[in-house]
Length: 231
Image (cartoon, rainbow, N blue to C red; front, side):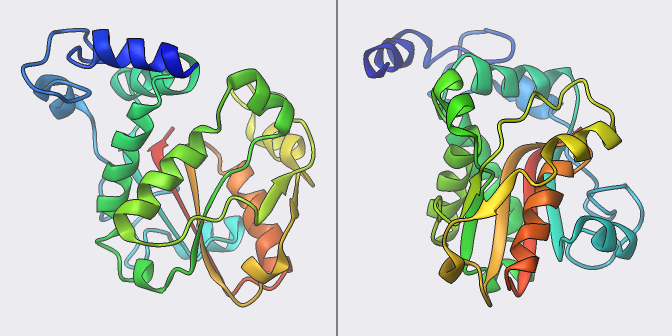
């Protein structure tokens, strides 16, 4: 796999991952495609789109999802969909580093980030990790951790249940699918801590809600969540 990644770097490092045009400098997407990425309006709740004034989440979503704050970067469209697809399913892992840096920059604008003790990437079940070859949330989290100088803890939460893809499920099915899917591995990394969950795509929030609930039930002081895309 490492040899394959080196070949990809050699032949595709100067090609835009979205439109496949040749790049004049070493980047991942061209300026035109970068401008076409649609940022979420920061004046509204990142979860539901309602007005909010604190930590990117309205009171209604805060109660439903157990988040003390939630930040996302991009609206879901074909451009970001293609980029995420290249990252998750074609193993262009450097896209994760690039997207993680963008998420980190956005998070840095919010005061709560200075109080976060640890970053927690959404864990994959070991079978799914073996199938995919890597955990996309972990790469994003590592990039955010490096940029913001907040420790990344991969061992705090474990996905104990193998769950089917959430893609074609409705909200109720999603919540049932990930219900009781997560367990705390190291209580010392959770109790009385302020934690930031990182994932690639937020749709209904079922996965991160399940994690946040487990964290709060095990003594987490604050639980924040973040994603690259709000679908």
